[in-house]
Image 1 (cartoon, rainbow, N blue to C red):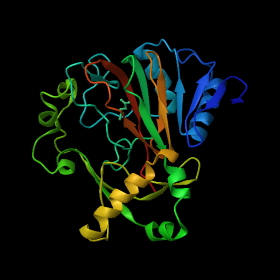
Image 2 (cartoon, rainbow, N blue to C red):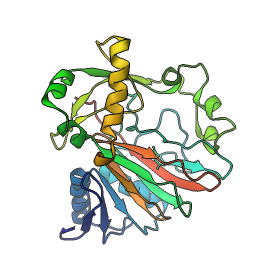
Image 3 (cartoon, rainbow, N blue to C red):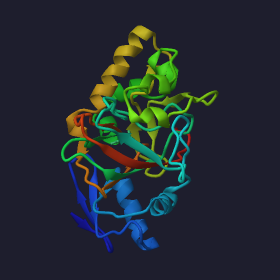
Image 4 (cartoon, helix red, strand yellow):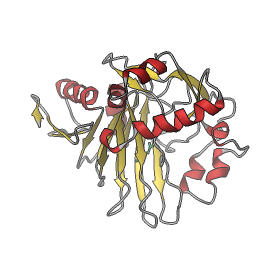
Length: 286
Ligand code: SIN
């Protein structure tokens, strides 16, 4: 545990994640925010509990992290289009985010951060897991680091990723309350190439940059690339690199998509879970 001047930071695992205490998200001064931001960069994902905030207060907090990103496929709340409602109804079998990924990797400027606020959660289940991509990079052999240096990934969202012609809404239809929150991306860019080893623009640290959107490694044959992508994805999310957060109404998580992956667990069929999500714009990875 570390106590900064205004907040208390309790690390969750040896890999990443910290719970922050002594904060009212709806009412904080700049000094408190500076400490929160430092904890975000140090621990990669930070968590708050028992926050009772309005959508306006979540938006005001999000604006402190940067410009708010509008999702290419998903419709926001009617009154707050920058807030996406991530909801699973008791009848749903589909769970949004149930693959290890980092947000919007299929766009040229993927998300910097994501802020998820729990409105309604099951009594048990529906946790979210996170993995530390700096650690995944640091633990690779020098030989592997050198082979991957300069290599780019090809990443895709929507139709290309699933290799079928149905829109996302068609794929979700009948399986999820998320279906009516999806819009067709039309001509929006849903494919992008990024370095597989990226440098964090604020900390200067290197991390592995891979996720479920990654289809292949540029310059390798399909036969070479497919097992490498599968290996890197499995390796980078092994338990040693992770933490897991148990939600309750009023909990909030903020993760850094530039150095983490996350996974929403799908172990609560028959129960309702409802979250409010805001994503912050990022830069072109290098
Ligand atoms: C997501 O991938 O953004 C969803 C995470 C969650 O619902 O826990």
